[in-house]
Image: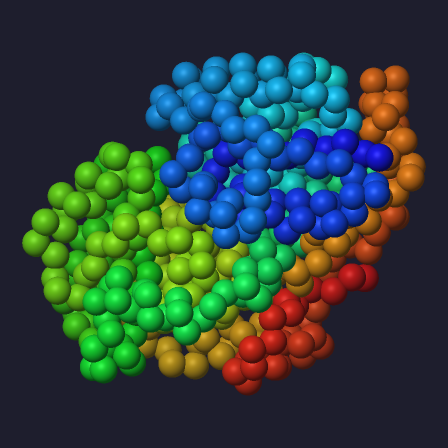
Length: 428
């Protein structure tokens, strides 16, 4: 039996690891899984744990807004947990401080580290900050890299990661979306959300909704002011639309947005952070999304929702290349021009739904599970300290992903308005 520990501390980590956690727990004959939550973003994390029915085995006290103090707490906490439990390997996800702290402590204890969503890069040292540097360091520490797309797998190979340790799995965010949509009580969600947003009036039913989120550290200051000015101009220019700004918990971001919208147009709604189920509904309901969130850039293609990326770069280049997203920066004039072009194109959503989703088919966890269930791979974990450089030949142990041409998958059903939930990637 392989003993795995999942270390997570934020909402995106929980969302993207939930389907893998459940898949492994379902194979209790082969895996013993422990779930450790560090407390990095406790208030945002708890509702997601509840929704995905995740019950932590341990919960930590970390959550300081100061990155240095928080990292010290994470290392101390995770080191104590690893010292007190027998674990064969540590699973981390993405580019958070928890993920890096977990990988670092795993290295110190000479444990194999498995990195889910490996290889994302912007190539800019401080954008996003500190995530870009954390994931570069994770690329050095991790022993097995589950890359969501061929593009980011190629990045890892260019950085010197051995090919036998990199597997293209698709992104587990699509697995999570499919799981969540199957659980979602849609009519109740619609009623609760329209009441919360005060949009239950019959005249509001068919109004276009525009979702706005902004929280990244590099956008705090003048960039965020520019985003606010752009949204104000758009709201005035498009009174028929409702602009839903999801307020982030970061005090600096929250204060700046509330200050800029002290006298907001009536069709701008500043809303407390949406839950994950609400966000799924909004991504399907909204006409356009303005965001600096990487997770939303990955989720929106499932719904064919166009995204305007509020920043100078993105590590989700696949969405840009496929036409799902446009990088628009933070200059108000540029944002307004890009929005008007996308918003004024009534056929764009149908065209996007006819495109292959570059991020997955909902089978990423299935492929990770198949690899971890392999007897040779499990033997590697148990003898890791004796031979940490062993050739695992991982790509030959599962079918990696490729993106199907638009006319070859189940895309036509989605484009025709079907509720089909399968994605658009297939094994080779």
